[in-house]
Amino acid sequence: METAYLIETVIKIVVILIVFSALAGIGTYFERKVLAFMQRRLGPMNVGPYGMLQFGADAIKLFTKEDIIPTNVVGPIFKIAPVITVATAFIAAAAIPFLPSFTIFGYQVNPIVSDINIGILYILGVMGVGLYGPLLGGMASANKFSLLSAARSAAVFISYEVVTGLSILAPIMLVGSLSLIDFNNYQIENGWIIFSQPVAFLLFWIAAFAETGRTPFHLVANDHEIIDGFGTEYSGMRWGLFYIGEYANMFFLSFVIPLLFLGGFGDGSILGAFALLGKMAFFFFFFLWTRAAWPDVRPDQLMWLCWKVLMPIAVINIIITGVVMMEG
Amino acid sequence: MMKNEQFNDRDVSEDYFKVDIAEYPTTGWDKFKRVVDRTFKIELFVGLWVVLREMFRFNIHTVKYPEEKMPIGPRYRAIHEMKRLWESDAERCIGCGLCEKICISNCIRIDTKIDKNSRKEVSEYSINLGRCIYCGYCAEVCPELAITHGGEYENASDQREHFTTYEDMLTPLDKMRAAKQLEFEGFGAITPHEDERVKKTPLAY
Image (cartoon, rainbow over all chains, first blue to last red):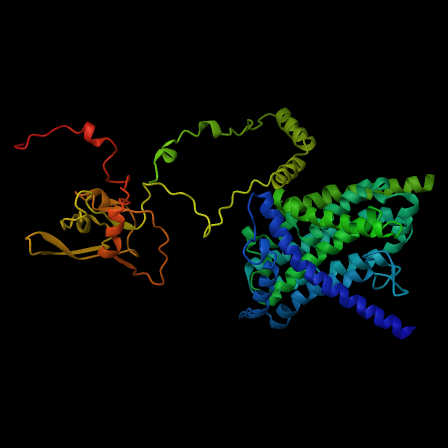
């Protein structure tokens, strides 16, 4: 039994790594296409039919490019920073149930690496460690723009950890567990949490944009302002690792939001599995959609929004939830 | 032959879209009204709707350049052309050298000799396209409408000094015989119906 469990876990890990590394690449294709269509352009068209092999061309370019370590950078830290970003993104995926459990050749498979009892706390914690990627990469780069970006990312990520944590606290109080499987089972019996906790849902969603550094809060690596920030000095595959980490994070958060608030995979039928994938696709699409539509906010506006608007609302939401639970 | 009409029609007033820009609020009450307005108008979702609508309309404006090209006007000033006379297929250039003299970037070099008919003939003629700024002075100054600008703009080169010679620019004889030579309508060319407007001048003047 022990050996079987070990083999099963290793296979799951390998599958998640391969699938989401590939998805991160394909995600860039979708992003370029969706942005192009929204801006009345065609996007990549030349590599393969409708540019579908563009991802392969980009991958070849990234893998074969020279790995430049500039002078004056702090070598070891500079080299390890992208690994932190991508590793924490994938480590966080260990507690996410991607599909309901299913039976294959008479063997029951749970598509979650480990259903630990601190599930969501573990996911948010490990994603929080991902802050060290941009922070260390920017500080080690010997570049003023990278340093600015490192300072910004530290400020943004730490501030929005507060909002994520507080907004998720009220649903956790309702469910009484941190495991995402328990969240899912709770929502089968009591309906989707979004209906009982709409404010928490909105807060978590907004904070997810800050956690992934996506467009309304893209000031971490603002291309037109601080020339890609912490990624300025990176080239080749190290830069690609930052990219894979960002996109993997987007995909994992697109899984976590429906699992927490929108009923997850439901009762575990094949329909529920497809519903979860559909919800995931919507949230991933929304990340791209906002990039086409919305402007960036300034760092001070972002801090203002976090500490003066979102955090008080989150605290009030927790208090109201607590009061209602004590009454009922 | 490309016509000028589509480029001459510059009345685009019916396509103008006036942006509604409100007055900047000065009093406290106006500022308060603006805050309320901005808070409850949910303009973020208007933006989302606009880009989504454009995505589903799929009204793509991309020109896939090497396969598709935008039409260019007959007045476009790209690589020069040397025209021939319609009546005799002879070269229009009389070797006066005015284009060399007026060229402000010194990219034209012309050399002439007297041929066996005691007529001046161009022996060397080159334009350094790396220096040429395509100002059109040479076409404007040319008394014979010999040197003009053409529409060939794809002149990327692997070096800066990139020359075109008289033979390259001259209208080929077979094109001339097929009556395919295009008259330049741009800078320095005679305007259409010029012959109706010109005043007769006595020869002794």
